Image (cartoon, rainbow, N blue to C red):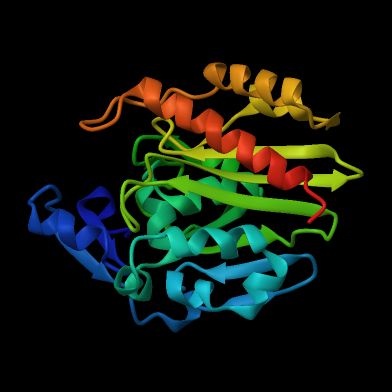
Length: 266
């Protein structure tokens, strides 16, 4: 990567790169195969943190007991990723480094305050998820850096989480989706995080909507105020089959469902 920089592409799971190569939408001078770097795989739970190697596949995350116990939001999101064949090959790091705003992992990482570990011959640095996604398929990674791991704080028992996504068919890209997390005590929500996919040029942390719910007991009026505030947070694009207005309506529907789930005692 130091030698070739932007002229090189990394091959991890290949679920995004190989189609781009086939369609001639990417023509790197060099493809660097990192699939057999075992030190970039694995799931380890430490003191308050789960560290996931960048080459860990979606399927490995889906079937991990550590993930189910420590990161229920992640566990609930992974079945929405494409199909089993893709999850068996695609990797966490590949999805995050691609920075497709329509995919599940970037939104989950925003909601969970994840930290990304990037390495180069100059050393390693830590990048907060909230500063990582810079634009459409653009990240804070330097051309010579490799994403090697993701560290996510363990979700405390008093927190509830929910992942919701709407797609035309199971496995399709989402029309809209939300990764939601909050502390729920006595029906009052605090430390609320609402992170959206398919809602803009990057995954979006809806700060205005979150503020309407913070330290509030959930009521229909609070939900309505949160939905109104979403218009200041989200800028979903028109697509060939779904208008931006439809996506905003669906975002409000999912937000209401997510908030009720977070406040539920079940």
